[in-house]
Each structure stands twice: as C-alpha cells, then as structure tokens.
Amino acid sequence: MAAHTRQYEALFLLNASYATGSWDAAKGEVEHILHRANAEILHVRKWDERRLAYEIGGQKRGVYVLAFFKCEGPKVVGIERDVQLSENILRCLVLKGDHLALKDIEAMQPQQPTAEEHDTRSFRRAGFGPGGDRGPREGARGPAAPVEEEIPEELMDKA
Image (cartoon, rainbow, N blue to C red):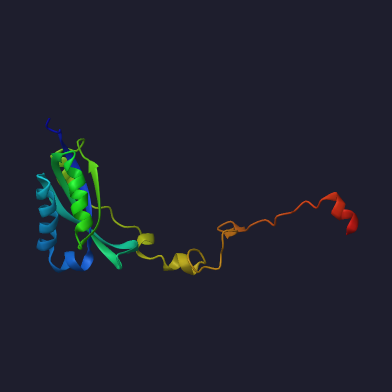
C-alpha cells in the first residue's frame, strides 16, 4: 500500500561558519538530505542568520534554511535521522505545509529581529537573568512583601 504524498515545510538550522563560508555546499547538503527521502523539492532558500538564544554544539550563531517539499509521510523520519547524523546541521523542524500555495511560499520573508533578540546585555545590567542581583522575590514591581508567619499559641506563652 502506497503512502500518501504530502507537502511539508522544514526549517534547518545550520552551523553559521559552514553555511556562510560556502552557501552552495550548505544548500546542497539540505537538498541531498531531501533527495535521499525521494522528496520533490518545491523551494529552498536561505532564511536568515541569527545569534542563537543558547549555544548548540558550541555554536553561538546559526543560519536558517527554509525548504518546502513533497514526500510520503513515513520518509520524514529518514530526513530527521539524516539531520541528526549531519555535522553541519544543528537542528531541523518539519511541519505539514498542505495549506500553503506556491505563491505564498515564494512570497515568505523572514521576520525582522527585535532589539531584545540582538542585545540582552541591558536586560542583564538591570539585574535580571543569570548572575543578576534580583532574585525571584524581587522583580519589575519592586521587592516582594515580607511573609508573616503564624506562631502557635503554646510558643506564645514562652516568649
């Protein structure tokens, strides 16, 4: 019994030094992984290069590659396995994309990063985050109210 062919979108996160050094090789690696799954590639493009929220495999920056393709559902597992075996691809997310038309795919543009995504130093300088002097009891609304404890009556007589 043949599996049903569906349209998918995949976002690949590549090692920044590898992808910016040779974009053709990076794109070729993504296409090679998709071809191994007998996928019909609709569209592949460099999405954006960004600083990562946390290090992945010692990398602080990554290049996102957006790919749209058609393949049989069970073949997606093979794509994810090949990504895990790749040294240059850090992560991959594959989603169903049946709702997208080709004109919508070609018109997609990356969202511009906000100032907070670029610079978290001001956030840390304000005392929040790792190493900040404001703990969970102190925040944007000021210091937390002191907690009053009830003293049992038998201890009240001794005091």
